[in-house]
Amino acid sequence: MQVSGKLTNEDLILAIKSGTNIDEAISFIYKNYYSLLENIVLSNNGNKADAEDIIQEVLVIFIEMVNKDKYRAEASVKSFLYTLTRNLWISELRKKSSAQKRNTSYEDSRELIERDISDYLVYHESRKLVMTLFEKLGEKCNKILTYFYYDNFSMKEILQKVDYESEQVLRNKKYKCLKGLINMVNSSPGIKENLKTALQNGK
Image 1 (tube, helix red, strand yellow):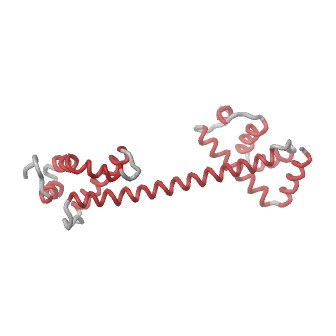
Image 2 (cartoon, rainbow, N blue to C red; image 1 turned 120 degrees about the vertical axis):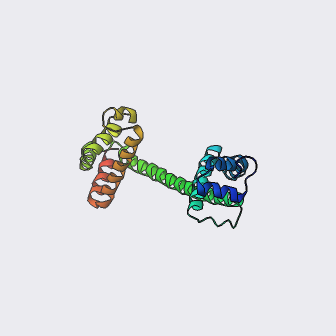
Image 3 (tube, rainbow, N blue to C red; image 1 turned 90 degrees about the vertical axis):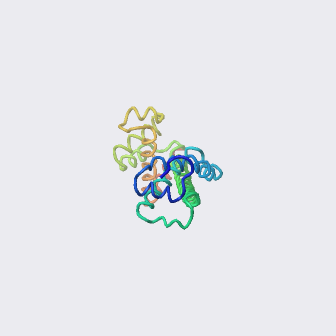
């Protein structure tokens, strides 16, 4: 098989299946089809790094399909790679969109809980009652919430006092502690009423 110049579809498939001159076949695809495939990603909210990742994945899938006789040559290699790239990138965009929605929902939920717990604490709350609730959440939550709300330590200062890998990990733990506190208060009318009274008396 000629490895320079123009390779036919049959040349490319033979190179891949036989393992002979496969590097030249891949080089031919990159040289002749890369720009076309890259443009699919670039023209649909992607960047060059996205395009590189997708094209590499497309080639891996294509080679695997050829070796498993799943490529029927009903379309040219160029057309097949184009369709495969477009479908794979659309799928990736959907995943990114779903992940973005989940992250937005997570942040909104966290901000809501932050506001809820702040509402309980800003009116010079009864320290004894609230500290009792903190203690019920466990030692780690007790320390984090006490440092943050009573000692007014920043997250960076708290990180130096507790054993967590990073500020982000610490913030995630604080979020879980706050969520646990809200759940505890809401699940017990007695606690909720006592806390409400304590906050009112502390104004």
